[in-house]
Image: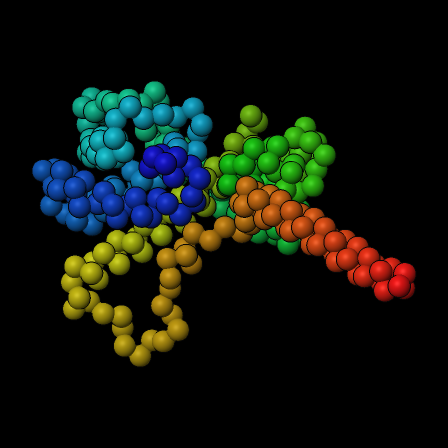
Length: 179
Length: 101
């Protein structure tokens, strides 16, 4: 089983991947900065990018995972330094790490709304457990509707999809009521 | 995707990234401890030592695992039923044999 496949199937694999490539990647990145805490922060973000990409079944790598992680770290160094023009292309990747960055920037921009939604979600978890489970499985665990239907006892994937829409509507009402 | 759905997606995404970051920071601290054994846990604090699994615990078990367990439980139940049926048949055969004498 390749490392990418392990990342897809084992939820905890990213932590061992972190240890596995850390030394070599740090050695490579030390040409930019000697600050280990900064490098650790970069490398942790790179592992998260890879983990999120691996969840997409269409994502494939033609280079090694180590090369990919180094490329993401280098991209981040340039981005953080505000040198967008020098972004390094990531070998063998169809989409690049900018998706991750776009989401991250949007998260920072919508912080107040997200904090409010988190509060509502906490309440929602206690009053509508099944609905919360459905949303959690879909958005957090990235499970397909057919899997959700099988595990939560819905007749088919379409039924689970309809139920998700209903739960989302209920949550939205709660969110709008919340001051 | 409507605006609210996007917000919901971002909320779960933020939570997952936060949990992963915590877990990776834990790994980094564990590596530091290996590299510099003089860094020790603070003395006098007991029962606070976290394990790596505390950081990325999911609220629900993965669907594939749940389904696999259900499948195994079903197979075990069928196996047990077959065993009981065989035992009952043997017992009945023994009784019939005993009374036929």
